Image (cartoon, rainbow, N blue to C red; front, side, top):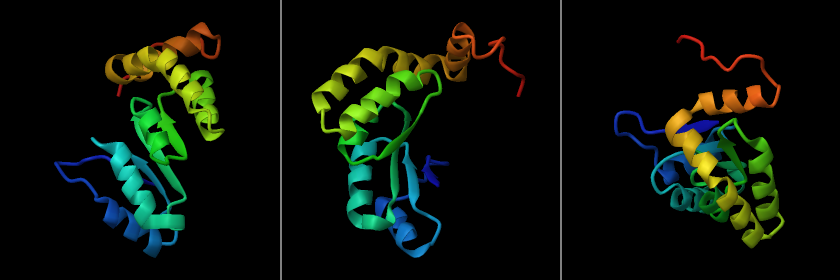
Length: 141
């Protein structure tokens, strides 16, 4: 998978990513995490066609709904609430955009909090509350 995260101001263009998908056998999945992700997804899908097997949302679900509307087939969301993300994606995939939008609005405060404030610690706190893990303390780097 190619992750499109800017490094030192460099962003891979949609035409370049599409070319990679067409010309490099094992390059078919793209996590788009950049300003204007939905537009870039649309362009990548149009240019890459069937070679782009996995155009994904990548901003921990902050841009999930616009990215799904643009043709994303999956997402690399935060880890705190798969039970909230899955129904959004399933509703959208089934063509129930209004339902997907309502579900997205319901989860957006937590999505935003995890993405912009807490990161992995939000997922750990929720997993501890759910009995999945015993300790939510972070590890040292």
